[in-house]
Length: 620
Image (tube, rainbow, N blue to C red):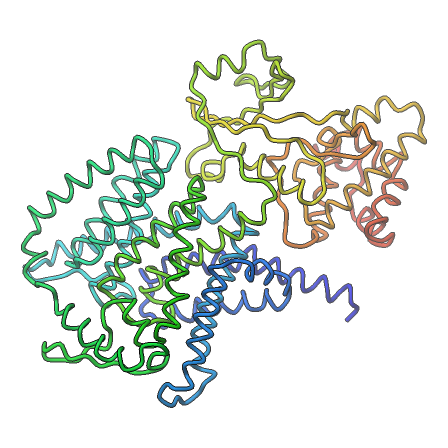
């Protein structure tokens, strides 16, 4: 196989993994426990659709490791897993050392996979989590129905699917309860509250039905963290609701909370500490066994405290990076608390820390309920921190624009573009442009990722690639649900205008040749501009090109495949004047320009496969 063909194949594999396989694998990791018959199926799904594809992607493009190795959370996780593997030297003998190494490796792949997912499909992360939360909500409604129908006084609800224990079920119910609570605190549309608040109540009811007390403490800590990290008027309502809800729980469920006493937790912790002091620094080894007899008639294999479990297995040397991961994640989440996904992920982590005070003990495991308490939140926080670090400038924050402020800002503005609903683009008095995006339904992609924010993110990403775009001055959320972006327009004329004003055919040919080079450069850098046409390309004062109207754009991990390049060209054939210039009068100039960053054979083959311009126009 030729080097170029090999490179193209590896790029296509990398793109397919990042764009399609990892999103599916992450979705199933979050919600598959609700419908799979057992955890072993979850393990296979995670290995096949997330862990192994992530490893293949990293082998295909090792440069992706640079971002991971600059993130303190990942470095601490790497040290933790490495020390755990080293501890096999003094652990009890194992049948296969390689088999024991697989578990830490699969956990590390969660961090790496989330980083690839956030970097290349950041637009889909929130919809994926929302879909998983909907699955959890529907499953919880069914679980509650069955529980109420067959309820007996001593019955504790166990989730359907792969769940087999009320306490472990409560971890996942609490995880999604925190999601709906976070959505209620951060959603920008009040209509969303009609879904998020009832959904939160249902997940909380499922949590109560498990009869577990640990998640109640964890949920309280998460709610407190959430109220402060996303401080607004809803925080006061949340704090008041917590006080009222806490009083109601104590009043209605005091017997459930008190009748089981400490559930032998203090005895378990004392017994675990007695064994920890034998090897406090290095622990007993990652694969060591643990048996505790709290006097309840059977032995327990976990100390029911994550920190004690870490101390027992890998000692103080392992505890230090484990604690650092969590502390650093919370610190960075607080510093970047304007990011909704970081607010959610850090709230999950606080919930996991609270639950880990009286639950668990195994330090590394295959995917199961304990992952929802620690590894899934930490992996998402690490990925978001890496993504934020890759930005050359801090993200522009969305500001609410009340009607009075909007009227003042738009006073004496000149309408540049309008539609049947009113103005779309206005020129303000200071010369900046104000572009409006109408409200979208909450369940659409525009509901999760407003087009104004896409415009700003795409502008920044293209500037990082060396492509000139408008400078973003502000993002706004209007009272009617619309979103807007204010930006400094680029000085120059559209390419269509310049071609119309060209004094000779030779001048037009040179412009089109330069445009062909610019378009090929976009394609080689993975930029797919769906709405690319000659009115969206500016010829700047220095003769270079720039892009405007950037909301309908995506940057792929690798150079564009042929079908997407052809789609760009076919889109330009829709405009008769553009098509005549590009594909008839100056086709040779377009080919010559496109060939400079690629090759003449590539340019000629790409343009030959296009339908004739008159056929395109006749079809329309």
